[in-house]
Amino acid sequence: MRTRQGRRGRRIIAICGSTRFWAEMAQANAHLTARGHIVLAPGFNLKAPNGLWADETAREQLKPELDALHRDKIRLADEVLVVAPGGYIGDSTRAEIDHAHRLRRPVRYWPRNS
Image (cartoon, rainbow, N blue to C red; front, side, top):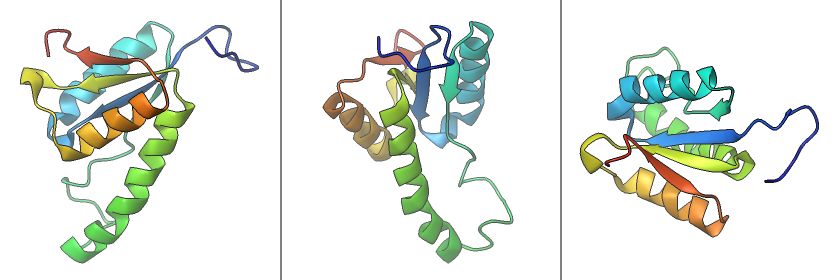
């Protein structure tokens, strides 16, 4: 495991998955945090109303930057946890998994039977 100052042996885990599973990602985040891991997760759900994107155009302009930010979170992580209830993995999540594999990050799935 790579080590960084101040981590006290804690693993950094990036959560990936479709935002349609927002509640499940929050559950996985809580579970990992309670176990002492450092969790990097999507900051917000573009599919939910928010003042940062008043319309579809604003949302579409924000998405590429958020995708790049999440790839950076994966790069910082020791491993990736894909939240995929029922085994659903969309195009964006597939791209994140591919990115993790290129970086040689272990990829796990939540729930385990996904």
